[in-house]
Image 1: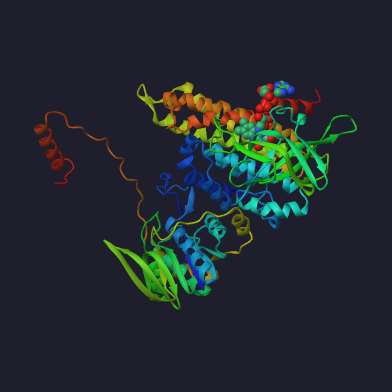
Image 2 (image 1 turned 90 degrees about the vertical axis):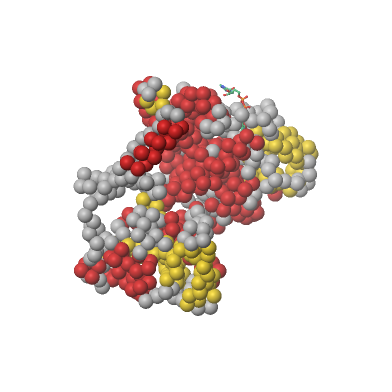
Length: 384
Length: 256
Ligand SMILES: Cc1cc2nc3c(=O)[nH]c(=O)nc-3n(C[C@H](O)[C@H](O)[C@H](O)COP(=O)(O)OP(=O)(O)OC[C@H]3O[C@@H](n4cnc5c(N)ncnc54)[C@H](O)[C@@H]3O)c2cc1C
């Protein structure tokens, strides 16, 4: 009797609530925000009020502590309607809040978490650099201790939530020395907005997540207090890997939710669009497409929820997280492709939201470890 | 200030109504929600509590499935809930109001709020009947409520305008669209709702017998409205088309 696929009453209510919120508050403005490539402070505020930041953070730091599965359900429901807003929440939690919550000291947690959990401010996770993407350990950004301060030099690219008006802090991975084995020693340091020599610049011209904030960060003799070190010196690489393991679940949730949203639109359209005297869904080739989409979504959901369940049980989940991220993003890829195909020419027009889903799906096969990197991670677990 | 909210769980506004093999309304797989007018009442109760202090108690008549709707209202911020399961096949407005009035009188109250009607049967009777049984004044279809010492000033919709009514408390007020914009339950609220008291009762717990609450109305038959027939386009020149239209309106549609 141990196997159980039922969600709790609270998880069901949470899904219903976030779904209603996404349909009423986000759906009406998503297309316009995408078109204008505009980050929405208003929606971020509303999502904060709803409690979508800090969902796995304990109440003493201002979180709602609803658990990991609940968090994933919330991201899934947002992504069902709009990838950009889902990204703000997923990155806000998994990349912004998580490192501070899991690795920060008491003072850092008290300083940042309450406002982050209310959604009043955002935190970014600065890992990727122009020359260190998939090879995240190849960071060139350096930090050296000078008296009571870290002096940081280098740059970061593609950092989510890191250059809005409310992006108050970024966790930055930097080289802080050499390890005994000759490799670079990496550490994470909190850099707050306004630190001398810290420049935050929004990036424009994205294909995907156009209403989500993506940033370039520059550190020019940037100075922050020595106490801003996250955890201990040299723990940066481990912190980064652990953060990405969790982040992969939220990327998975965006794949699953996006696939669900695109599928629902395709199903509805297939029932309404008449060609050759009948709804196009009645042609077997299209009906089978819809059957494949529904089946793949179910498969993705099972794998993702299992990975979340492992995490919630405190069991090892990194292998399943990589699998879930891979499957959910690739399922979304195929589902979005079918959804546009079923819409014909209209599927290519902005007026039909599948166009946005078709674009937004692509980031999920690239961010937080490309599909190739996920396969590397999984194959390492196999010992090949 | 003790505020009671009378709440009903209804079908989702988008639910497709079908009949089952026995000719009864099919409840299988239907999405259930808080009756939207009752949701306005819940929201208003919470706002009054936030301003004047007190307690918000939800009272509902229905099967166990109603707990879901009550949990949602608790997650919005209500303090506790009482659910009375009448354990009857069919109930009518008399049954519901009799049970609610008995339950409410046992709880004590300064103000009773409800929706002006439920979107499923649309009878708009229950709140008024409860007021009658409890011998309380009732103001229907309010779009604004102001609470002052011992009284409520309520604005209500009337044909072509508004009416402002002052009523002494306790009283029954029913919510109309426009009263407020209900909040979403927050994630914290959802977690807290789990720990809030939800009392489940039956008729005997209220000291009511099945006879005392037996419905006065018996449903003889349920049937779905006829599907709408396809529209008809009248061909030909304007004078002939107009003549044909008048003929059709008189003889087929029988509206003139
Ligand atoms: C919208 C957006 C938001 C982002 N948000 C953040 C953020 O908040 N924080 C952050 O730190 N980063 C963020 N990123 C960066 C993202 O994580 C990287 O883009 C990603 O890790 C890939 O790195 P890269 O772009 O440098 O590609 P590269 O690493 O240069 O990869 C290019 C190609 O080579 C393949 N490849 C590389 N190495 C191997 C290998 N060993 N074997 C096989 N194939 C390989 C890759 O799979 C890919 O197909 C974001 C990116 C985008 C687009």
